[in-house]
Image (cartoon, rainbow, N blue to C red):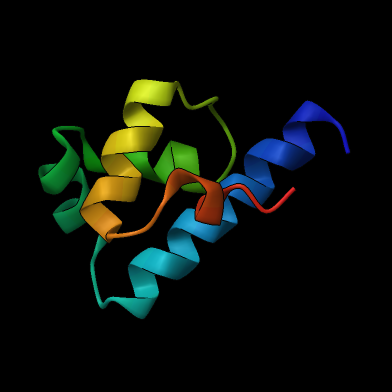
Length: 71
């Protein structure tokens, strides 16, 4: 699996968890101190995610970071 595939896989896991909780991208962005467009770029795999952002996202979603890393 190359880096682009890993980004898309991580983004899909974040999106799935967010949608399961009934959260919009805007709501998640507010929870993690980011913008809706940045959340969209993460969920679509267009940008890499640093550990700080990933930790904030996982905490906001109430999951462990390892639960978002399915590869």
